Length: 315
Image (spheres, rainbow, N blue to C red):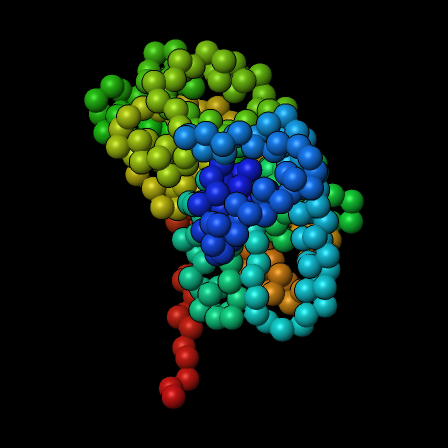
């Protein structure tokens, strides 16, 4: 309850999340402060503000929560039933633009499994999230004992919409786009800078952004509407084929990793989710995820025929 109040900054919001009465939460917080003989929150009109002692307790409470989650996950991993919750964490771009649009098939095939998708808008691993499965741009987020494998390679290129090119002309190169054109940025694109190369890094330094956002759907909407030039992974051409690639420079390859929490990997529901994730990133069906760069103009020739729909028996 303390951790819920600390994160929500409100007893009422914490109570709603915990699905209990706000008066019960308030009494428990008062009892905790009395027991510890310390004030954990400043009660203000703007909300519950942690004191220094409260800030210290948050770190310890999160460790306790992680330990409790591990116990629960370890017990559940022995459950062979094809049902229950699977928590997945992924970047905002992959979560909203690639995974979520493909979850229908998984849910149709696994009606008793629930998916909780956490879309992460910044780098690294959140302190308060312990998902069963993480799709990461940094494999160092894996803990000792976790299962880890390379899932795909993302290839980033500079693009603009046909409307932008028609109005402002086609930039001669990435450097020209950065120096002479309106540029857009998704602020989460900071992973694996060592793979960018000198030219891409220089362009990123030179660019004066006219629009930036931490939301990948917002960035894509702005790009497709002709707001400016931006860097995107080539898989976006699967749903935005009208975009125009700027320049002839090589793409920036970024490795994508699948990490399965050690305490969850034996649960059948997690195994089902892992199999599904591998299938939607399978390079045989998705050439844009291969290690080698495939130009979007070649995608049509590479794409296989669509799979037949799932037929369900008549009742």
